[in-house]
Image (cartoon, rainbow, N blue to C red; front, side):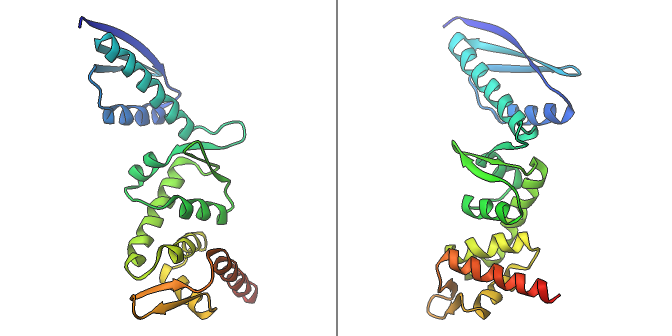
Length: 210
């Protein structure tokens, strides 16, 4: 097929948006050849390839720019939109979505899954740091816990700035979890919601004593 060329211009608000956009563009794998020329608040993108390749490249570039803006700038409700894959890649870890949602909720943030994206009030840099902390805690307790107990321990550990091992001990002390000798794991003896409610009441009681 005949090769063609197209130049599109992407407008960016600041260096932060430009850096994030360029970082995402570098990850893009396309049959079309892309050359980016940056000015102050404009990026001129020269795309070369077949007409179909160019059309696909333009679609993906616009999609990336839209995603970058959604994660850097809040909407009218003060909420950001993040791709879970982008977030895990940036945080260099992998944490289950229920754990992340519960952690945000316990920290008083708005958080919901919408059309496969995380919609939340927590800004990008903060949520990357939070996800990274959750991943670190997960590594610490993964071998000695079941998935159910982790979904209680990890959000509470980051929301209350506690060591995850300490949270496990609390769950055992209040009768919501126990050590299973045959499995070499801690697991819940209550359902997840009950265990979390008992744990939060326990922590609330400790705060009141202080």
